Image (cartoon, rainbow, N blue to C red; front, top):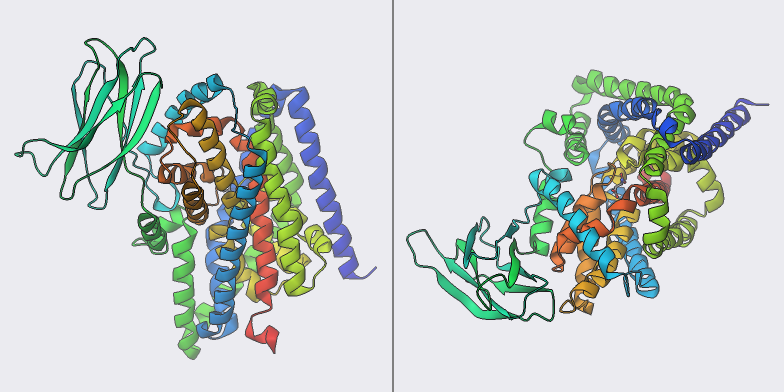
Length: 542
Ligand code: ASP
């Protein structure tokens, strides 16, 4: 047996060990959930070991890739190919998600009480997101205010952004309400000014428990407040809420551009914010290639660090079956102990089927077809070669933490060139998230369909579906490669089409599980991208 065959055998044994570890962990979690939860520490240790190498690995590999090319300008063609690939596959994924959700219609006819309960649960999650920053500097600032019944004139909402031209108003009646309430928006440019009414009053009839409408904020307004008049003295209106308007597509673009740059390199390293680190590494290594012999020591050092880190990952992979067993046992054990498994099947069966079928189609048809068309590689063989990375992605639910394994598999098992893996995979793990995009689109439509059950005023127009498609694409690009990051950027999608963000409660209980599947798809999409872009490097063409 030659050394290649030996290595292949060893690799197959490792893959089988990982599969056995996942199956055994799920089995243990179902039979003895509390005991399974005890493995959490082991899982965390493995996760930390992987995450520990991510920042140095990304910087060293991107730099060593550029140094290997010898000239940063040679990155032009593969760079353009990589970005086109990311964008095209993300758009394909979104379209697949939209088609599947419109066929299965998981939210149509859903139980009203279930939606109302989920909404309450969602409100808590939203508060958590509002108090902090989303991944990659996306700040979620919904600005919700809830008003008591008796107050005729409400609290005010300060407008921070001159572009904030729309606000959303939600009115909820008490069950005993029998007379319509009138609601309108008031505005002023500064504290000295009198409040002025903006637009016509809205009449909230009582036959619907809840109304949502969007009001336009007049130009120059710096402060707005909601004014509501109950139809009769006493409580006809339980609450009226004022939310900052949905972010415009322009706002989201602005955020995406800012994500590329940092004013604090060390801060980005500490926060594992990979995009600005990749930008810095490209520029820095580009400089090194122009400095000749003077920079040779640094270049050699970078290449040496990169090689050492790859060997370190090889060592880590030996621990993978144990680490993965612990991760999966602990998380599935927790779900079983909380009684979430049954809940998943009973309540969210159609929604889960929707997302999983969409992901399945993308991974079984779209990606293999692209791989075969552009590289003539056998997709089944490629899946086997990348299987350790895909399984690790499933187990960690983090593209970023899986990156070291992906690089290892792509380079040593699938034979993708170093030039391509070093550049395409770190970038892909950060911005190319097909699974997340598909999920965001499908979940947003599911939520819209469910919301229409409790609020007949809400209509899911074709325009709203188009807005969901665009924002889901951008939200997936903006999502960090960490567990359940897609849930946070989901708020942007909901906000953009005027859906109450607390409706997120509907998809919360199953998100941890779907996250694993979409992370695996994200990961596989990155690897296919690295194989395809590999063809476009100058040396490969020669
Ligand atoms: N967990 C996913 C990833 O790391 C992101 C998401 O939440 O969709 O790729």
